[in-house]
Amino acid sequence: MLKYRKKKSRKMKHTIILIAIPMILSANNNMETLYLQNACNACHGMYGEGMGASPRLQGKKEALLLRRLKDLQRGKTRSAFGTIMISFAKSLDENQTIEMAKYLSTMKKVIPKERYEHDSFDNTGDGSS
Image (cartoon, rainbow, N blue to C red; front, side, top):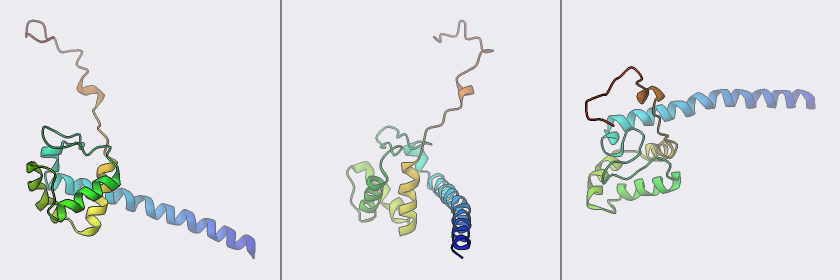
């Protein structure tokens, strides 16, 4: 009887893992879609790397990002440029706020290798280095 329960328990754990992985990936895809739909990438960059006065989000701790999003939802900002973020943050519900902080903390910059490898391009005489 005990062997049967252990086997059933193991099988249940595997089933839960198989169900959880797509849900987690889906949550990230939903947040990526929301990030792009709200045009967050216009100021923060495609990978959250930050641009100009817009801060880098990539690699920041989830707790910090969550706190900043919640501050924005309460109307608190650290700079004059942050006022535009208040409306974006307020548009997120509680679950989206948590998931967005999680998504932003896991962003990684991905630069395709072929982007910089153009062996067939001859730049002689065009003033480039």
